[in-house]
Image (cartoon, rainbow, N blue to C red; front, side, top):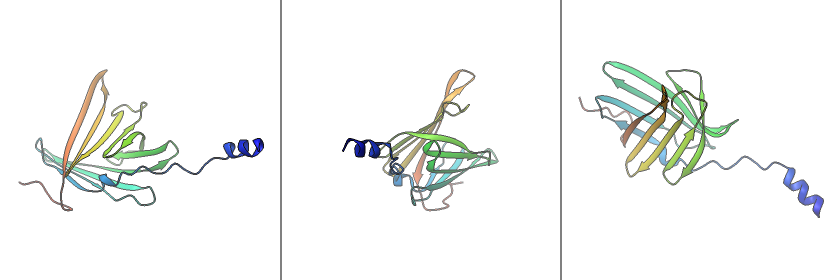
Length: 151
């Protein structure tokens, strides 16, 4: 009996269940601060969500590709701003309508936070630049796909 219990403890269990981040799925639009930022997330499929962001501000456009799912570091957000090499932010907290991802080794940001409240999705990145705490925030509103900010 003891041998069977020890053997069961040594056999790795299957991968941890994916957290429920379905509340992030959709098309989100932020028209504040003189910018137009849209963020789109797919619904979770087999534990994977795909996303992208397009931001237009002061006549310039930028983009970011991302996905959330299982990685070698565990369940994580993998971000590629401007098509840069992937940066992995491990999921460190998740609950109803909130997810926090972190990567202490990354220059900026170190944390990525998503929170949902009704038809709003709030995104925030945090970290340090030059030894000073910095953050950026987006306050998205649910919108039909490809909606643009008013001119």
